[in-house]
Image 1 (cartoon, rainbow, N blue to C red):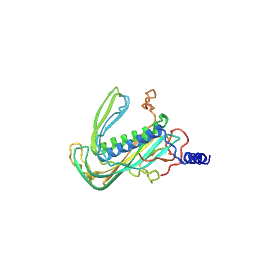
Image 2 (cartoon, one colour; image 1 turned 30 degrees about the vertical axis):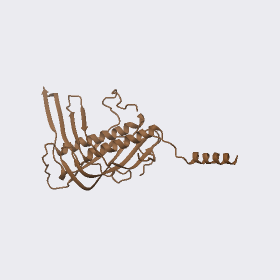
Image 3 (cartoon, one colour; image 1 turned 120 degrees about the horizontal axis):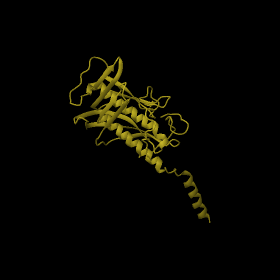
Image 4 (spheres, one colour; image 1 turned 45 degrees about the horizontal axis):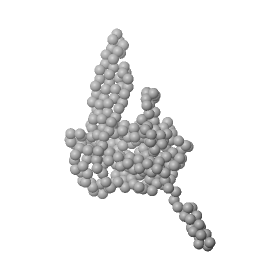
Length: 279
């Protein structure tokens, strides 16, 4: 009798103190955040190829499209902190990689010493929580395009015509194609002054991207020359959660090992009331 009571008490204590197992939705969101972190580190360290096309003439339908590609084998990514918002089902990973010898997007072997690159990654299995995260990724691609345009330039095709003093044709096309490596998001921590990423009051996302131009070469391998001034250049990318120019477009959202720290994230428009961000 006494032995049975002891066993029952031990079972009760274990049930109270045992950690609550995470559901697979949380585990998948955390996995997505880690993989997004790794992708962002690859694009920063190894580099990316970016191609954009835009048509902004007064007599044509406006269009702006950006594509980026990155491919590399990477190891040594360390997840420093994983935050998970249970209410919104959003995981946020902070991590870094210590650099040694890498082969960049131009095929060059670059040797680093005592250089650490940090970045972030987001993940969510919940459709209603993905639009702000998608806007943030769109802002990053816009920043990639702006950085390439700043460093390499853009190709412009323009054609206009008037009849009887009336503009009948106006074509204004631009193309950018470049390979960039070494670009990074500054001040990534949640409470950093002048944080390099986030959302404005309307829910549109922004990403600041910086690059040390002293290490830059163009896609042909020629070193770029700059006049006197700051060596660090910065661009601001922007992204939207909605497409007001094509409201009937189909949604791009498809159904859906660090221990997470549970915390509310101030991600706009992602189910529930915004929480207080803090790292």
